[in-house]
Length: 169
Image (cartoon, rainbow, N blue to C red; front, side, top):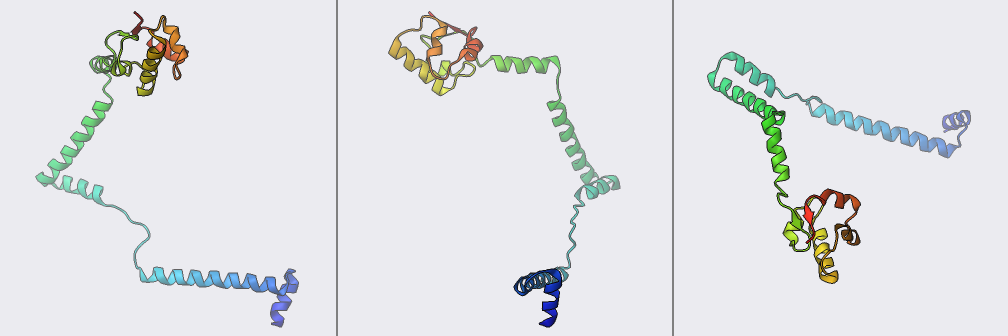
């Protein structure tokens, strides 16, 4: 105990503080020891490595036709999917543009359109379509397209998007 008192005086701690510090150090040492003992019993390495790719390349090079075919099929599928993703030919681009435009092919009369027709307009979901229909029921037919600004959820930008797609009759 006198040794502990000498150490605490040199460090500048009280006896209680020194005891707490020593307790923490011993607890950490015991924890480290237990962890080392557990790891020594589990004789497994920390790093795991998958040899699947190396094995498939080795089997492909060995000349086994069954293995070679499966490797070639995988390569063909990979190349085909990459080609499909990176296909920027004029035909593919035109197909994509046609698909985008096909959602709204005709001009919609905003005063007679039902909910399904209104949801085809860009930026119009079910809530906005329902709001337009409710507005028509309360206030009658719309007289101009700017009257849509009175409906919650429709702003100037949305009106600019749909201007060429709608009519008011």
